[in-house]
Length: 208
Image (cartoon, rainbow, N blue to C red; front, side):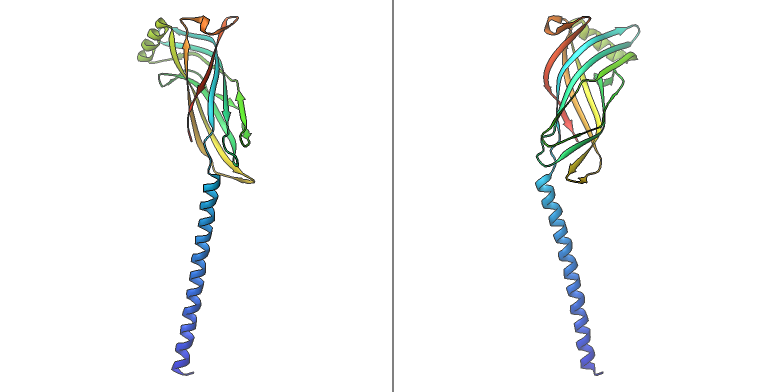
């Protein structure tokens, strides 16, 4: 074999390797472009939550610094996406006052929420003789004297996005629903025996 023939074969190999490299790069770019377009077209919008009502059975501050809470809430969630479903793998709901949890978490059943669907839950939230800090007890005592208490209904969960048969990984969901309860004027609510139902249409802040 002549030197000229060897050089020609080496050039042919280099050209072949170059074409393979360009092909791999083009394939990677095409895949990334498809993923990007898929995300742009179907990127999920976080669900919206609305606190509809709170039925108060007990909300009592006792000596020295314990709080007993017994209430039922109605909360709804809406999936605003047209092409993406939401799978609520786990949802806990609890009541909070001044950033301190005052009820045990109530677990809601796992559920799938289709496109534009709305789910409504009405869980009970209990907290029996829950110890609170002296600061929280003093603030609550003042709020009870004025007759207006802000209780935050918190939602803590894990969700997945679903497009067709594809399911995403888990995402942490947090929702905060403020409920201004007028204890000074029970006429602001609806009497239900020993309980009072306060109606809201209160939007919640949601982070996913």
